[in-house]
Image 1 (cartoon, rainbow, N blue to C red):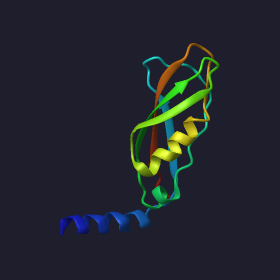
Image 2: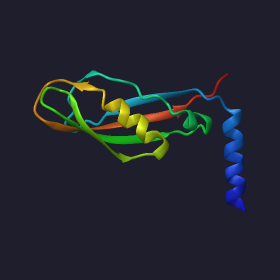
Image 3: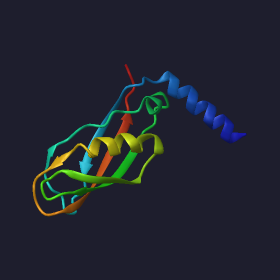
Length: 113
């Protein structure tokens, strides 16, 4: 019973709040290569309607020329993962040796005022 009430309350509040959102991305400080081109993820419409917020962590395999070869999600909401993977796969890093970079993208809905 509590679960149904909580779900109803969550959905009711999500429709009352605005569908706007922001996405912030940051690289971990482990072996960070400079990001030369960053593409911001598109906040998924379904996630906006639900006012879903959260962090998606991905690991990007970077070629020596700075292009992203592969992106794998290692955590986050399934509704947000595809947007994060799609965006990070378009990033370009500074040239260097082949490496892996961990990137966290923070999806946060905004309340319209």
